[in-house]
Length: 96
Image: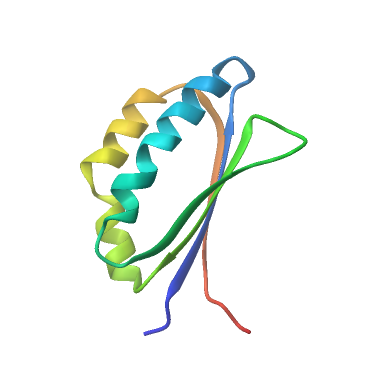
């Protein structure tokens, strides 16, 4: 199967930027150690400090779905409840 690319855009509420950033950073090392994770890179928009983006590649959709069920993601969701204005996730396949 072709690797799966995930692009996740997270926009924090203006008064919750630092909290969301801190909680997103907590996901990095534990996720990079997961089975099937090729890369897991957090970015921040240069013009909008409330806009974060994860660029991820996984060996398969099944391994990414296992990641989505892990406790550290549940912990992130609980810690940022009400702090995120928008979350858009795209599952993508590389063409060239």
